[in-house]
Length: 287
Image 1: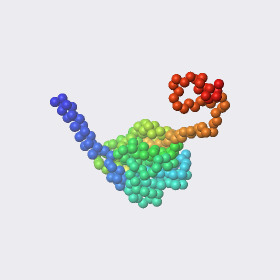
Image 2: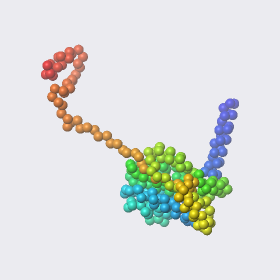
Image 3: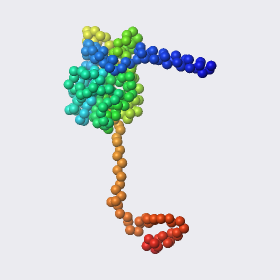
Image 4: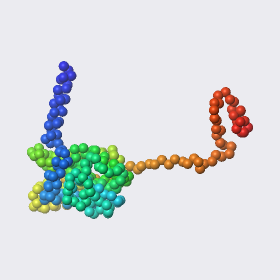
């Protein structure tokens, strides 16, 4: 009887959690792509992209190498045009009109060997992923030692985050069903995968109003937010470097070293129990 009383609230909690995730949780990535991609073409989405592009261009100035990979919720845009890396490509779950698109993949299972990519850009990929921690591990797995990871995400502690939470209560549109990852939480995750943050950017301090005239009229808020470095920007960007250095043990070649006469260790073959030490030395020619 006592066990039944304990199990009943537990089952109710599991059922409530399932209903909550079905109504307010993050949708599978393929179901969110179409709506979010179309939203980025609206005046508000274009304004956000412009601010993010400025921060990404600044962050890419310290990134060098041979291969740069972009993983983002929107497969139609190329955010790496200002990079000095020549080979820049994009992987995405859907076929999009983008010359940088190289293959269709699942973000949770990247078909790339470990430690082969110099830099990876995650553009709101963690926000709309049902398993962001696994995606983060996949991105760091393919990075070379001292490679760079650039993460762009929505800041839940902002006017944008507040409006997104309110919108999620009244609508089922996929664009508002995010992970809402805090900056501090993401920095903790980066420490667990041996990533060392080198720079943090914040931007879009205006409220997310859809009207184009309101966006332009509030441009002064953006200028003052950057000048005062306010913490409640609508998005954040982290530039982190992979701090893991592979160590290859070098075994000494003992064949190069010859024993010094008089200091060689006697090689004993066979049983030695009951044989005096003096007899062993006589047999070896030491005495």
